Image (cartoon, protein in one colour):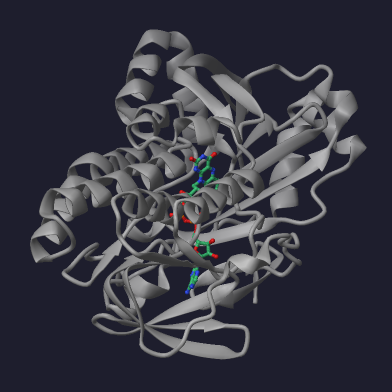
Length: 401
Ligand SMILES: Cc1cc2nc3c(=O)[nH]c(=O)nc-3n(C[C@H](O)[C@H](O)[C@H](O)COP(=O)(O)OP(=O)(O)OC[C@H]3O[C@@H](n4cnc5c(N)ncnc54)[C@H](O)[C@@H]3O)c2cc1C
């Protein structure tokens, strides 16, 4: 099917761009399984949420298997900016140094612009630029190092409480497990299999891509995220390295603008440096994700727990998605430790924790997103922030705290 003019295909619940994955060099890590295979925890999805859960539970002594539908080193539709607020939770999970090792740059400030108005402010904490091809692979390698059995590329499908079918190559296995952790991203197939999907899906789609533009990058503002609101959506642009620019954005399905390239061109009309960068090239392919926002009706019971995007996702502009993914992994594995394993009580503890620490912030993000829905509203927001910079900084801090 096509969305945003990009060819995408649905593999289970995953929106996957129709382009080849990066070849995985270390394919020997998949354990051939027989029938009657059983583990303590089966994690479905090898993004930040799934890998962080798998690592933490394996370190606690659980027998963990992780299944991911795509090849290691795959890209993911993302802005590649890790919010500085994530460092604390990563430290608590013993993952900070590992995640830092994947960073290609830092983010210190954000500049917003809509039409003739704009403002710039320092971020509440120093963040990082982290290409997902590197981050997700680094975390999966660490999961294997601490004893997690990783099956990839392989898909998982819910059958009944305690049983999941894993498909790898042409083979199918039933895996018995005490807990299924659904870390399978936006529109989670596991959540839908449990009947926890929301009644109405969101109507927005994300897109992301990179291109080489070394001449424009020589003049690029360092350590700054550039956000632009244009007709049809918004986009964020960063210097991912000395050679590559990375852009990610959002398009509303109801908007008259339907292609990421149209948004990029609209932003370039008011931004000469981006126009210069586009003379050097443009993304040859776009990764897509959506629809969003996504909010399942339930996130945990005695057999299943959703984490990361699968447990709920608002909008990308605040750059909090990976932080929420790590935080939900922290909340789930803390509940596991507190209850000595998984149970209905552990599920209740986790769901309460998620509601208090993540779902509330996602609500705030959605309220702010209203301003970005129309360039006229975004211009007003920029004007107000320009006039009252301290209030704008305070509000930005509140949204991420
Ligand atoms: C346009 C856009 C820009 C963004 N920018 C940022 C940003 O700058 N900073 C930030 O922090 N966040 C950003 N985000 C959000 C961030 O990308 C997500 O929040 C984050 O990737 C969530 O991680 P996850 O582990 O929950 O899921 P994912 O990273 O989506 O991983 C899910 C995994 O599950 C696998 N999977 C799915 N179904 C199955 C199945 N049935 N069997 C096996 N495997 C399966 C997939 O292959 C995938 O690897 C952005 C999002 C969008 C849409």
